[in-house]
Image 1 (tube, rainbow, N blue to C red):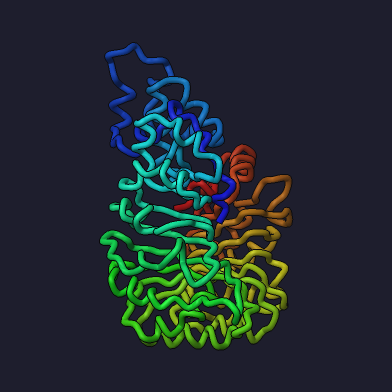
Image 2 (image 1 turned 90 degrees about the horizontal axis):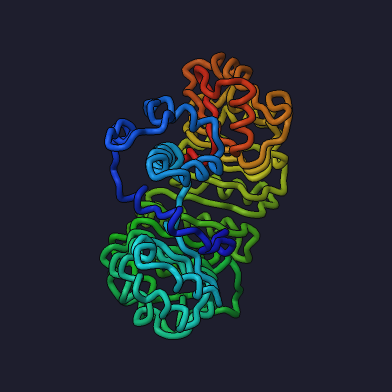
Length: 439
């Protein structure tokens, strides 16, 4: 939840996303437009330009798109096609307390482009400043437990196009505002909701919210629900007594809870058998005992698992449902060869901090893995002086029978250093891409 660090300060004129999002252009037609004598660079076809663009950083591409309208369109098309996580302009706006002046300075064209907003304030005048754009929002996130007033009348009644609602920092028995009346309403387009109590609280806090049962039953189109271990447990009777049917349950938080992971994981398995959810994505933090990890691994329908902090040396058994595994720090585990062999159906792996040598067992043994994302890579046998030895990794991969081709996603500086040093980032069974290319 790093949205708090984002600002509005984009240049609407140079970075308006409307031309990216609302234009379906045929780039070759742009390049051969005879109405204007083209610059020599436009004599290159689109394949040549895209090959050149691959050698540039995202910052260089952003500078290039500002040189002329024609290059802006070509670069925008390239970035939209190849780097979907890169957004220009006001695709997402974060509005914090006392920052609404910048928002009010946006012109009408820029305002119409806003589809999602995060509000880190609950003051009524800040809500009023965004009233005009609420009907066009598809995603709305409010990150405060201090919202004053009726949440439905102040906000949700105007959000007629809302598909995704996130409410963070729930602090008591009122989810947000002065009352829970908004939970009695129908929202025809909402597909996902997040309710986050920061996984805190205790017996003295009234965390049970009976109105949740009404909300989910009135809004059966909701297929994805994100919450914490604590909030899920405190409202267990609501889930058990309902006929809620979710496609996906996202759950995260501290595993060191008063109620114990055994009871929470037992609840999850009961809910799975009841049909409450079809698959679960879990982010587990602070695992201190092997029993806690065993309980987590016993959860039915576990499709994605991210282990944020494991305070014991352990390995992972085979998990047939698991499709994605995330590990914060590779120092938490001893035997990566066994872990790699046990990833029988895992297709995607995410590492936050790892030694480059940790990659080798997964290249060598994880047959079905097709994507590995790495945020921070430390040097080792296959990674020296900022350059990854793709030939060595490809050789390891080719020795594995029926191995899938693996795409490794790394930060841009590593991608460019490797490309400039080797002239190649795509081999037979191993490809290197920058993280921005990941969907």
